[in-house]
Length: 249
Length: 309
Image (cartoon, rainbow over all chains, first blue to last red; front, side, top):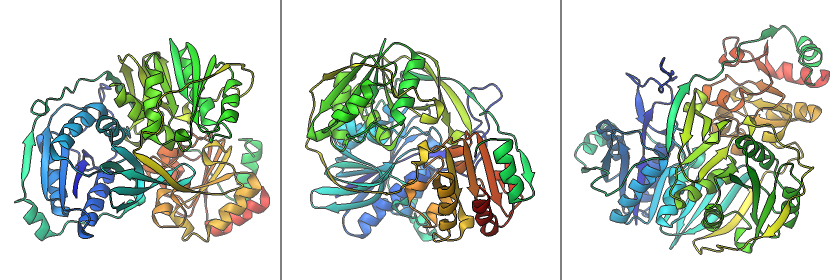
């Protein structure tokens, strides 16, 4: 079974981003970029499926600038077999990304598509579901467990009240949540080997996809800050303040 | 302008997040219709009809919609939603699951988790785990939007008398099936709806120690949450997680116990009215957002707090 994993290059999750003075966006100059944490979980899940003998080939794809090759090489070092870069330096919305991924799905014909539930930059949580609509595949979002059984995949999902399990016909789309697995680190020999694995570059035009968007960002601001309050000396003082000053208990 | 709000419900009852979503629709302005898609969902539809400000309730009652499978519900919403100016759903696990599938089916972008309405086509939403707020404008014919409940005060659940109309449409797409669910059973209030939330972090040391928080919560009538660190460490299940990747809460009182205050956690609770932090590390970042900070050993402070409240 072929598995397609989609990943995104984002600001490293340890970076505290700052809004630009002209409110045009956040300052990404000279900040560390990494693979989106949910995408790392997606790569790991695909590699585990291959180790179990369920997946036969793992193709990793990203949509981004030339530098996004770094994240593809990381995925290759973790165990993906080959990579596709859909090169675009524009900041694309989820629908455009889903359309590009649909074109890749049409070409590659994977049985399972695994991707992160959301990227930690735009925080949209849309692309997997949108790809579901465009391909007509079933979707198992926010997955904490994935089991392929015959021509179906059982996905246990993190929902507001607990867990839900659905059975999806293959081909299907899975989006990862935090508890699905703990991603491994790439070993040095595997990082060296990954440099020789195939990496193909295509453009949105090659795929015949328009990336026009109906949403534009007008401005980006820093959030209202909360100022630190006071330190109380004892539990008794805390209770007194909550009762008489804040009046919340 | 007519706005379609997708109701969040359990078939038997309407979920409170629906009221916040209707509030967002009211800010946009125009007639508000509510869609209740479910199975044997008459009670939820009846409740939807009573929401203040709702003009019409559409009910799609079909076994295929019982568990809100997106493969079945999204085509229905896309079909019904075509004629509307906006389609809104709460940014719950359910709304997040279904609505992007609707947007793509309608070939429009989606705007996720709005926290404010600037005008009928312009909205504010957090990005980068809440470290920046983007103002976005949509030129889509149908604006498809999820609403973060904490950004909008709920409208009244009573006072309306909307007509209820049955609608048909898409049914079982034959792509997916519901297998089962394990829902946490608790007598405590639901996290996102609770007036008081007591949360524990890595400082709790293990899952058993959360009993101190449960005892305090029961005294206060509070819900119990946790930081991602506590969930990752396996102390408590993921549905208790408060933060950017968990639940977003904004209670009257938030008590953070043994939580350092990583930005991912702050993103989920910093709109709370009053924040209390109890931590033995006086340098913990949580104190920078707390109204009342207590530097103390939580295993002494929490039982004492339980006694005094």
